[in-house]
Image 1: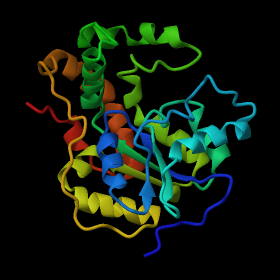
Image 2 (image 1 turned 60 degrees about the vertical axis):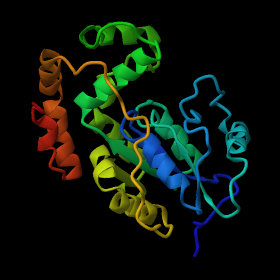
Image 3 (image 1 turned 180 degrees about the horizontal axis):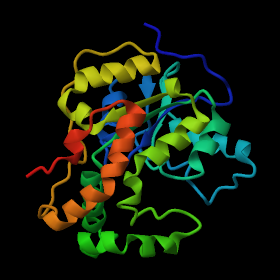
Length: 259
């Protein structure tokens, strides 16, 4: 059984789970860690390509520190990094391409309305935000400006859900055949077939059917306010239609009122 792709001494990290936050990336990383031919560090999010404190004018000097995060990898295994902000972070794709233009990238997309609420619940749960969800949505643009010229890592509840912009940026650097775009519900409802697709995409042999995992499943103290849900659905309807055209998907269930 051959688990390795062609390696180079310059870019041993060969695949990224690059998006999206609250889209099932923790579960996907946990599933992939079960494969003997793949290695993802125990620290899931390495935050290398979105680190603005590094000197990106001299990127070659940074790679040794990045590679040190993969200590303990089995010889011959494919190294992967699961940091879901990469698809959202403006400079990240250019940095990834400069590091390894043959990189394979996986994105897990989630209904952007549900993703926004899950994101807010996570940030309030760890006390990084303290305002109500309707207030967070209404004030997002103003609050996110405080992070300029960068994006805001915490308050970007709505802006992270505009996936079509992220996909176009991704495909401007990498051909589509080097990308795999999944839906969160695929991983939840049919993990075995979804993981087989991921394994084939990475060039490793599929494993036997996986036992379902639910990592970081959100538990909300209350459901989303119906008025806010309706506002977000109206906001994201054109975006969802764009995604249907870009990906050839039927996303009508993302536009339906769950009640």
